[in-house]
Image (cartoon, rainbow, N blue to C red; front, side, top):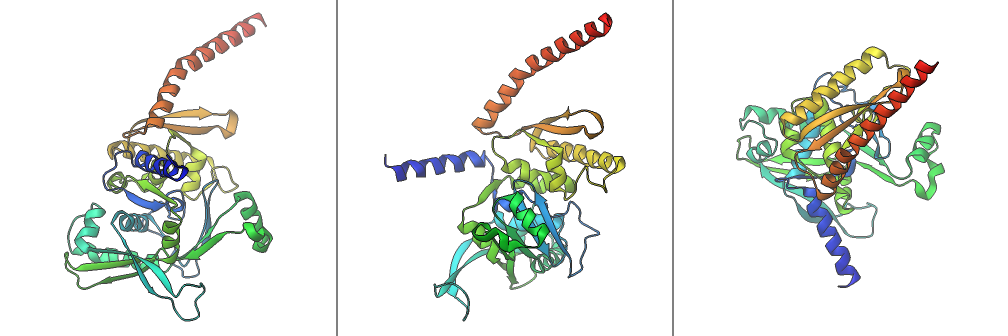
Length: 345
């Protein structure tokens, strides 16, 4: 077997393991699965055209959203588009545009309103078409700026306002997620043509995609669950997540100057509801919460068992279960020793 064939076989193996038995998964850019750019809410979104915010999930994504705030309904619509098959078309490059090739690639999804509603597991009724049109209109108003490279260096440059300091390491791009949405009627079986935006196409070209169990995503009821699930499902061979990461995905910080005991308590209630929702949606079988640290800054780590796990995940889960008795025994021994010490004192 040649080196090229070996690498191809590894790619095939990784792809099939990543799918984990999902039925018609959504193949989405990893940055869109591990981002806080979609607020965990459907109402009270900031619609000001001057809206701009930097969303950071440490180690995963730094994205600036400009144009308006996006929410749960916008995330679902984007994921539904990525769930449907697409074609690659060529069209002449506009005069004066950058790039040496005389043409550009356009990623296009051709479906019907019914097909899109089916992909979203929504009721197939014409009353839902108006909502979808408004949702896509909102998405087209937004410009995404994605910053690649070392996160600490990027954040430092953004804080100082000197992105030029990144030099050759200042990779990234900006653009829309959806370029255009066209339809030939407002009947359920009317043809619908959706063209991806330039950034979406770039991520597909770069093959930076993850496979998302979209059936679970669209069965979820909690806005926080819809925010957490893409991250959880895209992280192969992981069976736990810290609440600091969940907070970052929700666009908030647990320990900054604006956070209070009340807001942290409410967020933890939202997390509990989200994991219960994931169980109901058959994304996970169970979960438990591990308290970490001491004192005021005690945090939570959420361990979970997926409904569908890869071989690597199964091995990690078994290892954790085997280690638990030893951890418990060590804890008992420590407590006994501390108790004896207190008695001697």
